[in-house]
Image (cartoon, rainbow, N blue to C red; front, top):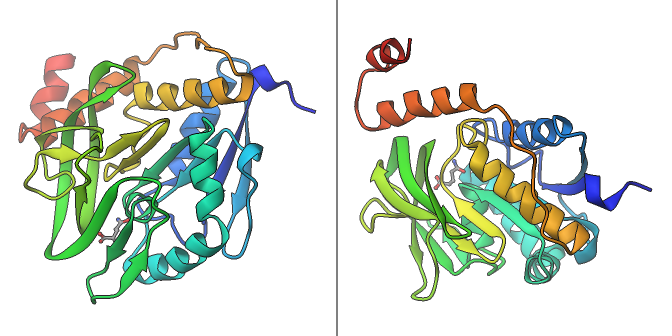
Length: 260
Ligand code: GLN
């Protein structure tokens, strides 16, 4: 039996279908940041047809997918996992849902061909595909647990996501498109669940987001308020600066030169 204070139990949802744009990289970052602190990530995969029990995991991960894969997953997830995921998050588990996963964690997604895909209703967000894709580097000011940091990523989605009136966005767009290309909002946060269009993957360049998820997951595991030992994030920070500059339209050679 693993020591609760030093093991995070992660459930990777639909790793076969929802894994475009290197979403697995996010899980590798979570595992390494725990290892560097003498802790461990225990990964369970839950694909099509698999059922989950709300108390079994501290952190859920759902990546992005193309409309075709999403349609398969949407129906399956609503049927086999939706209520368990909602109660897990309402009981304090953490979740990261990226792009297509974000859309399906919301109320639903109408894809580019007009197909209506059910969401699990965990997040108060509704998505409809537009005529164009929203693509490019993106920079946001994100707020989690009352702290605001710049977060960078790459986005590529047809979906335009509108949040319900009471929903809290993950952040405000500094450069890029975000939820719908118009509102200035990006992503959504509910309890310890984050939905976002940022990938590339998201966590390698944004260790603050990774550590927030790990802290939340450990809080769920232990019932306490864990603190994580600080790590040397100078490489991650440099990578984020370059990506942020690119999103703002600066030339990366100049940014790298300035840091040297
Ligand atoms: N198929 C969805 C869209 O185009 C999500 C894409 C993704 O996950 N990258 O909006």
